Length: 594
Image (tube, rainbow, N blue to C red; front, side, top):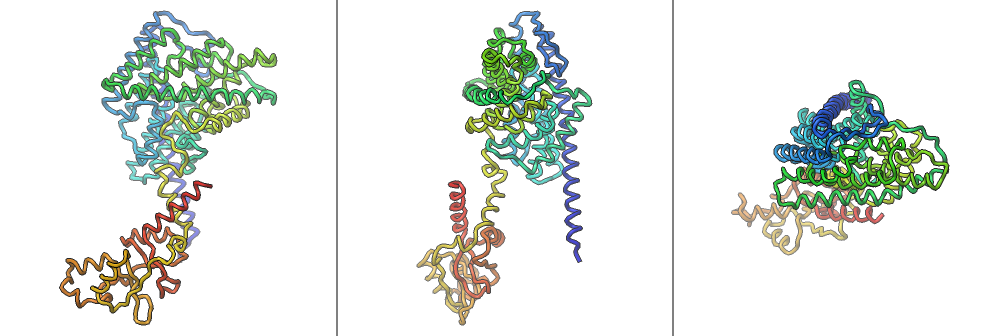
């Protein structure tokens, strides 16, 4: 006798073990990938920015920086040269070996999940790592989120492919790789895991099956990065004591950043479109974008690289209102030129800087009006979260990531308020073009939702009234049956015995194959319906689901099935594939209207 409980328990154990092991493996690679990518950026930055351009970036306090401003020892024109050369090298790498590595990376991962069965070419993470390190390290306005997302997801996809896992499993490991990469490089394991399952959709939806694998991967990757690099949050901020009177200010921030986020998204994709239309070889486009951005750097060097150091200085009150405003505008244009031209980097870091600087500027205005306000860093942090929530439609993960990146959890309520408002009011435009509204709209889930819907519809609800049920006796001549079929557009007939009970089904296609060119063509005048009918065709009842009917259609390779009474003696209708699709479309319309 089968022990069902034991079998179920053993299955759960094996299932948990499988995903734990796989998620840990992905997390290990994502963690070391984050370390490698971080060091690669530092190496390129050392040679391109510090040694060649004689320029020193300000560094966030959590990464060893101080409160001093930057030192510009050489000519700012060298920044123009640096970022132009960086664009050329990145373009040569990307468009010679892996065009998918162009752009901000996260969109490519989202596209792979929805449209390419979670498959990523193994060469893409390698090229993405090198090209992004060159782009960011040479001064390009880009972040680390897109590249590390492709690095982590690339290994997850590769592992699933090598182990011959299903498409569904490959997609989950793809997402787990994103969670591990983001969680480690930003020192935000929970936020990174949530980002990976939330960023796929611009509506209020998440990829629930991947939540636990992503959390495991992110924790492992974060542990590796912290052990070999640092555990400290990226930014250090003054302590904040929550005051309910400030909620109105934070709500204003949540609404005020929306137009800025809209400008960011529209500028980015306008620039991307113009570079796509540019009639020059693709390998040179990042160089052109770099050169145009380099002109901006001559006048505003603050927007080179990630600009995290400048954001840190704003948090501790070292920047003026106009400097913050110019950095936010320069970052919008610079990111569009750097990445939209085909360069390689992420859009998360620029988003934090734009949102933080713009909110800091508004915070300065609040401070001038309200003498209670002596510290604008809370407004900067809230602006960071609200801006990216509006631009990328990831409010939950952004709230957590900003808290983890700053080590400041006292602002969870204000960030939640502002980010929620920004998400709800901003509409459905997004910096991630490959996002879909919900799981229902994803090709990855389309089959699941069709099955779910068809399971809810009964056969009796799909049958047309008086559906062409014309019974024919089993002793009718085949040639007479053919004439009857020719008079009506009927795909099959129920065949009955002399006492009226159902014996089988005669399909019109079978009938034609017998009469015209079949092996029994010479006997067509002698054959009766009983000689050519199908006796073992599965039948369905009015109470069966359309999902069951569809599975029989597929298995039997037929286009119509008899609908019979529960005792199987009387045919009361004929269900066709067209009936199923019509019923599905009607149900879809009902759900959309609701």
